[in-house]
Length: 169
Image 1 (tube, rainbow, N blue to C red):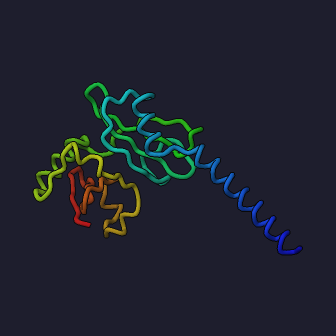
Image 2: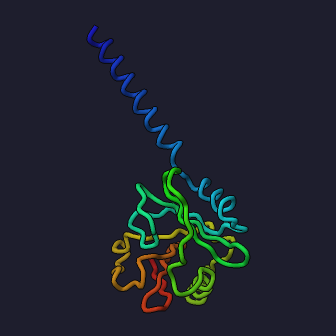
Image 3: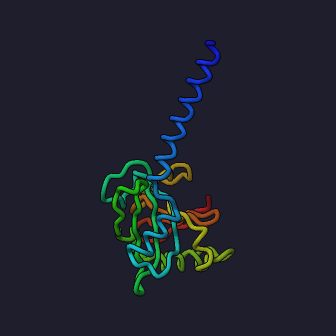
């Protein structure tokens, strides 16, 4: 009898945990949601990069719980970047590109500095933005103008003293 009661309690606990997890997933934005928000709410004509970020992002204007999603693209001929919070109840908003040079100018500079595998528009889908954890690559955040970088293949692209730096990682 005790085994049946224990099994029943275990089943109820498992179902409760599953239901709780399901609610969280339903209420969270994912990359495809962020893409849709960029196009439908912000009028992006092209979406170049969709990348996860952290709550320690210097670009974040409003405190959000959990993680955030960066979306970068083009609208009416200009580059535009938005932050989509993890939770659907939180509002997405536009942010200023953090580097001195535009995204495309930064990639052009990367292509001049690293000639082995140039980054093309088709490669943008392989780009990630990074806003923390630079010590893993032996980069002092104090040497960066802003703690924000572009990660592409085995390179980290960031800005230091107003210039674009490419580090092999």
